Image 1 (cartoon, one colour):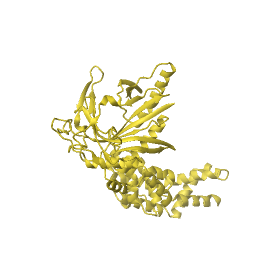
Image 2: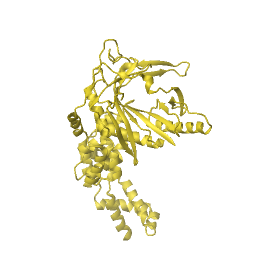
Image 3: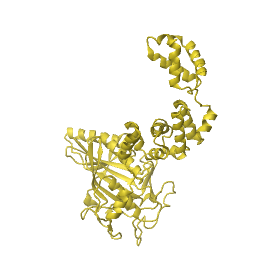
Image 4: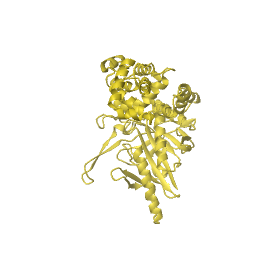
Amino acid sequence: MAKIGLEIHCQLTKLESKLFCSCKANYRGLEPNTNICPICVGLPGSLPRLNKSGVEKATLISLALNCIIPPKISFYRKNYFYPDLPKNYQITQFDAYGHTSMGKNGKITVDGKEIKIRRIQLEEDPGRLIYEGSSEKTQITLVDYNRAGTPLVEIVTEPDFENPKQVRVFLNILVDLLENLGVSDPTLEGAVRADGNVSIEGGNKVEIKNVSSFHDLEKAVHFEITRQQSLIDRGIPVELETRQWDEHRKITVSARSKEEEQDYRYFLEGDIPWVILNPQHIQNLKNKMPESISSKRDRYVAQYNIPEQVADILSSDKFYSDLFEQAHNKINAKEIANIITTDLMGFVDTNEKRQKLKLNSQHLNDLANAIMTNKITRNSAKIALQEIVNTGKSLSVVISELDLSHVFDESALFVIIDQVIKEHESAVNEVKEKPETINFLVGKVMQKTKGKADPTLTLELLKKKLVS
């Protein structure tokens, strides 16, 4: 039986500055090695100063994951030598003298199974290694320290996952939770990264690193389970090691032997004093936490009668749930939820499109009201929505410019219905034996009116014609 654990690294992208200095936390798009200072690279005499907001964001994550938060926290130096670590040590947390990291013993439920959180620690991100060259012989490694010192929360789970699918589902739930808390933007490159730890039947643990996406991590875990099982079946011991995911060959490859905790020679960071966590301050943070995703979902179902599947999709995406909250009222809430989940999410399916979105809450409110009062058909509403997304024009202007007004006039509809009946005599003859054929004729009327006819009225009129 496989045992799978995760180490998730979440950048606190909503902070303005790094964890121990005033350099920008947002290093993206900057020229390499321009977002650094003596503290970032650990020059002699430089002194780190802890970012208070970083501690608060980490506290929010610990609260959301149902963790125990200690009365005081401390920081340690984790010593190892690697090109992306300019100081040759990382300032992180380590429970050497009891519980002094941000949180421990938390949990998340995934498909009815409880996944335990071993610990949550606040630390600094290392720099970035950039590889150039088309092959191993010509490849060179470049180092960019702009990221070094970026505020990071590491979330370590117990090995409670039983299969790769649970891993992916857990990560999706966690990302939604982090986004809902407002601590991180998971759509940013490298903002949320995960490593896997896999062992079989009590054998040695293998760490999987350098996986670019949750989808690939699921594949990597699946491959590693298969690889280890194959070794065990042949009587070959599984090595304790760190392996990297080769996304081109879809396999894991050995990177180095796995370090143990003692190899890092942890010791207390003498330049950062112990931090007392005031219980009242923690309670104030808890009181200000945004509504949880599960609470939103239940409220949408109970208060607005939104279907559970729609409520689940809507509540789990902070961008769209915020838009929904701004746009709806008690009467049109269900209609707006349907518009967002059925059409808008399809039109705006990337972060780039979200940033360029010209639609606002008033547009959604107007569109829902127009549908509910039969001023526009659902098909025409979809056309109007696409135009509003692209242009930001008001609904009334879009309806006028694209001629999307609803066709209500019965006499006008009868003319079109007569045309359809003449053009599709075979279908008309089938209606008596196969009543559902009438839906085909309704579709043809909708086609001729470019979706502007009221489908319910069209069906009624067709029945009258065919019965008479």
